[in-house]
Length: 457
Image (tube, rainbow, N blue to C red):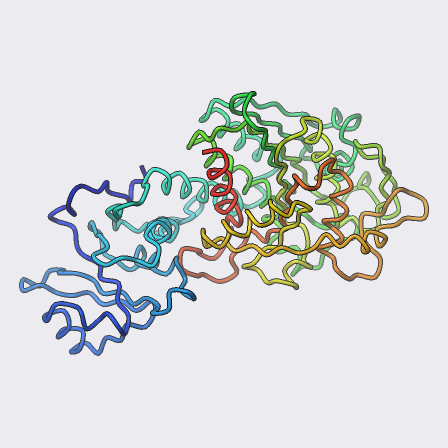
């Protein structure tokens, strides 16, 4: 179990300090001494407000923390702020959060610090697992999120294709999964689009292929975009657009975090993880606008823009994934700026032709406070990808509906779109929110883990 969690007994530990979650309606139900001190301190229980209550000896008698009165519009992660506010010690919720499981998870996610390059004060407060909460499950989710955040936050000089492969191998070893890699010029024959995108870098491109679980169980395949840095290629990005491109492997980092959750809880499925890991660089042998490549599927692709490289590496990986005929095929990618323009940084769009699958995803995204929003695979826009001299172009004409047309491009490489799910994630929190510090973020994995656990737990 996570080191910041304390197993619950029949009663909270004697030395544990109570946390009362209060709003304007419940603050008057506190014991008289607590009410009196709150009034003297002019404490108002606005969401996120915090007040330490003293005991007669000057120690800590308890903590008041303001939450929303309206549960419908509440941020279930708000109590997570306590991890960064509380002094060292052991605490327990003396009043029920809106969602005890998400409040416990938020406590762990708020305590996250990225300390590889600079020391940081790590929160030391511990939380007693609330009644009815599966502490082991919450812990494995937090571990998966931490893995994803750490990978995204690591700068590209220390997180190239080889280092991403090493992270995948470390995860595979921890869970006794099998893993193999095809790299360098060996990609040219079977994975020409991956080779085209990554061939200009001095850091060899590769396809990482990990499998785990009983071969007789339902097959679930995860594909993650692993562009470890994206200059834009010869269609070079402006400096502002290139600044955060270390996160362009966020899809790969997210599928590895999700894979950890699945394997740690031993869900009854056959898992396969495919990661095309490349660096989109500029050199004399870089792929160029108007080049044409024959994909693994056999479809020819004209390069309209070298900065639309993610869909190219995913196309070859998705083609390979379909060879197994998985029961569910999921790809995650930091694919388009258009998705951010449409829905902002906190609400990734997802795409599928499976109506039941879409309903499942939406239900679990809401329940897990891991927001996702379905956008349509609008087939009339398919013609925007037409090329006069190849089967398709990698970018659309006109510049509209960029996230949708990127999804439509990927759909051409999927055998059964009703069993396919595409997520166009941002993988980054621009400004800190409760349980979501600024920096790399694990978007969509918790929702998908809950869906898979419901299916195959």
